[in-house]
Length: 47
Image 1 (cartoon, rainbow, N blue to C red):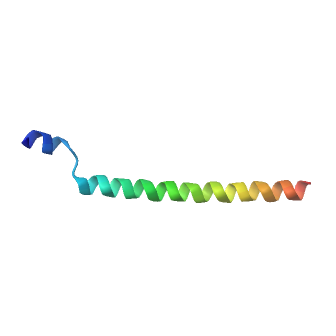
Image 2 (image 1 turned 90 degrees about the horizontal axis):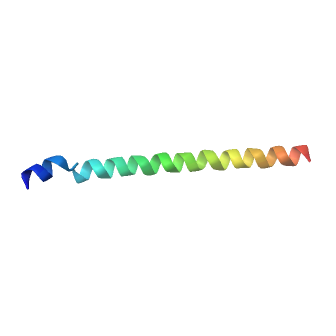
Image 3 (image 1 turned 90 degrees about the vertical axis):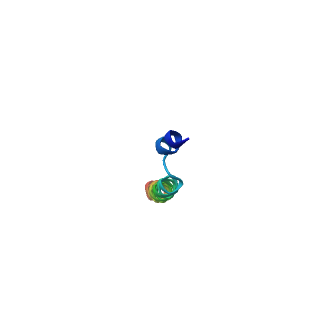
């Protein structure tokens, strides 16, 4: 039992890692959205 608890990461470290992952994913989504908007504007300007 003691060994298992030592091997497993604590719930707080999992939570912090998960929240960091969520933040990164949200930032990535924002960047993709901005790129899509830029492409749309470029297409409209080219047309």
